[in-house]
Length: 452
Length: 154
Image (tube, rainbow over all chains, first blue to last red; front, side, top):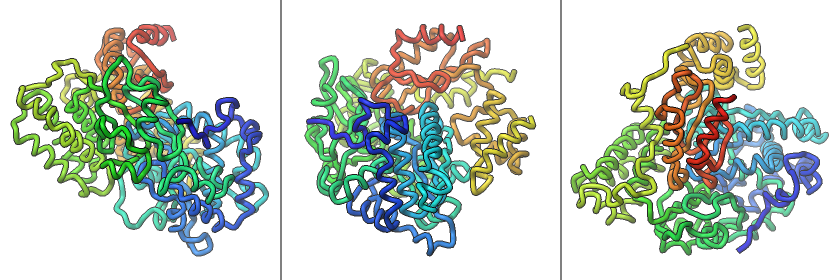
């Protein structure tokens, strides 16, 4: 199996962070083409491409754009927001897109803004991404100088301002409505939907929100034509995706592949398999929020429908490979600790439920849990599912419940044997989660340094 | 402090609503003070016509805003799943030994704060360690003494 590079084409042999290099391989030609088209014709190409969102939810981009009112029908300004708050555990693809092909992302932002008639676009960039902020700032500056961004884009009479807004460390701000609250200057907490952002988003105005990878794909769609783009990949999953491969695998990294490639091809042919002669135990195929797959499901294909058939989701395309050294109770605990730490606290089932999950999993791991606590854990997961405003609670409950169901014997052994059968030899043994560090501080176990 | 006030006005002008400037303003204030003391909230509030309490409420939501003093240098070790699978805890412990502090603490001389963080987004090249917000990837336990020496010399 070979890489199929649309986004990273030429990025190995050229420095595409430079505007002129990007232009030399056809960069910004799609924008030139777009501003010569009717706005609706650009959206029609996105619809024909059947490109689905690359952030995690997989909603078709063209349909989302179609939900917005037309500029002449909207009494309020229309906004485009690029979601560059990449923070789903296991995912590091948007970062590589921004570092290696920043102009392709900028071009996608400008074309999408033109299509919906936005005069103002925001890139909500993850706060920790300092190098990416620097590269994006420079790329935008060069794009402005060349007239691709600014008061009169390529002499079309249409103007666009692009602002990079930096986050400050909160996973929840990757959720689109929490992101909007954060961008408006509040704590990043999700909103009730409806109204959806397409109708009432940023500053209560119509807003299109798309992930970095989705927007970076837009110039290629216009270059190839939507119908041609739709021929790539498989049915219901058009095009390529940048898969982030990590965990117990020889060659971790980002690999751009046609949708429909199998996990086996990604992990073994491209990733070089499992190191140290260990056995594959489990695979998390779409970031830590999705249900786990067992080793015997390694022939499942990486596309939206196949992942659903396998009982999980394609999510953000982050494939985490887990070998036989990993205790699945410790995995559950570490994943639950993450969501407990990142729960914004707005909805009770998520705020309290993630805490219960952590407590129960710790008791199971330490051999203190009674038999019925295993069912209590599944019951807590069940009570979170579908009962919150945003998917964060579900994102904690679904994977942890899947570990219990798929690896029930291992959970049972912790109870039967009064402790972890790995006896301290698990790869995740004793790993310190930030939430524990915070609690140690609150309990006074860590001394806070005196003000200078 | 007039300069901070003006810098905040400049940032606020980029947004249709001035409230949107609260995060970038807090960032500017933190760059100036090293953390966010009560004075910083008063400055940001003054510049954006908000209350200090509002600014503190926003800041306390986000991990990168420091509500108490931190070291001149920041070492952040990712211990989320992908990094943990390939030995993040061993890297963290190597830093604890080398710096003589636990995760969450600052060295006595106020130079270095060590902490664990959730997924930094470098999963394929774990363990990811951010040193003064610049990613080092991958970091192995044997790399740690070199990084600490570099910080001590800086």
